[in-house]
Length: 211
Image 1 (cartoon, helix red, strand yellow):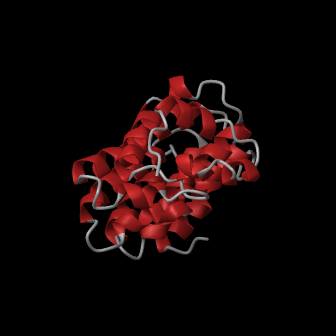
Image 2 (tube, one colour; image 1 turned 90 degrees about the vertical axis):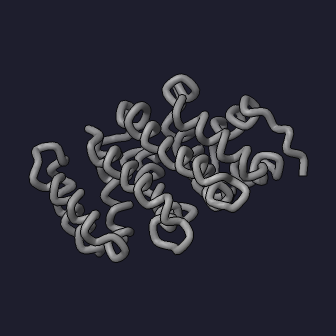
């Protein structure tokens, strides 16, 4: 497999999708990069998103998120493979926190559920490619703390979209890490920080009863 796709070419491709069909036609040179390259490229994108994705439309941002989280790629499975050193796996997961805090929290995702395609994609980040599975499965215990670190960052963001995404991820982890999930959600419910129209969803997430 040709692995000589530059970061710039990769970014130009995944930030230009206008439709789901564009994602599927991206080609193997984009979807099947070596795992260590995937880890490196995702870290660079997620930690530098304010500059790299400046001016991206909600539709393109939505498709970009759907793509790198697994609609047409297996990027997060690749990151968690034995080919990627554990320290790089951890760094890649932690980079999602930068993505939430430095970019998504300031992006106009919308103030209600599914208001924009980008908001829906951000919400679904913890369903796509079983990203939360790293906090469930044996052999990936080193990613549990980084994942909760990221979810804590997202929950403490100001935007509705980031908070809803965090609650979604926490809800999926409730049966595996009940005490940690309840601690995070109880903090949100007891503060004035959480969006009022997310309180019922937070209660659902606290019990793991979410879609």
